Image (cartoon, rainbow, N blue to C red; front, side):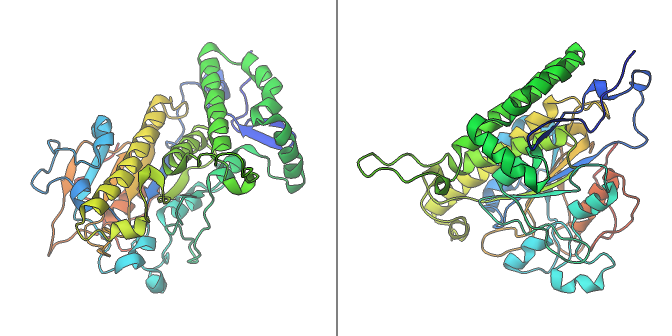
Length: 420
């Protein structure tokens, strides 16, 4: 007789709780082919605080439709062009400079929030309200080498962001405070959360069919790889200073590795249905990619070749990591909905400030996955009949299952954007 595993199953031990991926064994055999009343949807926003180098990011305005040439900065996404949509001439209107950054996911400037029924509530937090207690974490607000300013509650409170190590511990350490200290001590001795729960994992594996066993093994291997990466990236403040007689040790792997590890954690959070609303803001650390300087300084490029080259390196890496996230989600079967996880995960890449020189007109925006009909470069009116970017936010929320007809400064859903 088939006894399904509970959907919220964990491998547990000594203050550690690893959520299991969604498996066929979690579905009663008699109902294996039955889909939920509404699809399980997820939302991920990837962002930065300084806009983009416009000439490397935007497709040509005379290349609307499917036949556009992939812009230089976006070329890491070329293999996914059928699963994403580019936009031109969407923005939130009269915001100014850095004040536009927190407006990205609401369309509402914080000081004007009192004039709107939902204030400056952000898309991710609206989804968190909608999902309620369906997942362990209603939402996750993340950062890599940069502050995250885009997530706001209904009362206008900015949601604090967590870094790579804290995200890892949130997913893989049990919540009770008294057990966390015990877990930390044990991890110091064993160096692996998987070692703590491996015997239990072997017991779970015996209950699974061959397809689930393969998926379970792939999941555990992904966790193991991340353990190694995060251990390698531990800040030098946690390590003793080198002996003066010894050569200085190399620096940590930096922005590229940190961001890659974070998107892999995001993929695991989705795979385990730990949350359905995620925002991540990422930046740049001086010295990475062989560059000396700061992201903010580079963004004020003044058409200097050295600064433009730096921005292209930084921003191309962001697209590379978005492509990696899409690879991971596309490779994972969605046991709940059918298809892949990417089919039911909307990824929005965007900034609330269009360029480093403080423009907020024509925001850099990319939409991927989520069941939308993609493959197009959508060009909207540039001047008199400008379309609010909040219309895109409303479309995302309706696609997620919310029965609403307005959000923030929207005037309706986004024309030319359909979903199944």
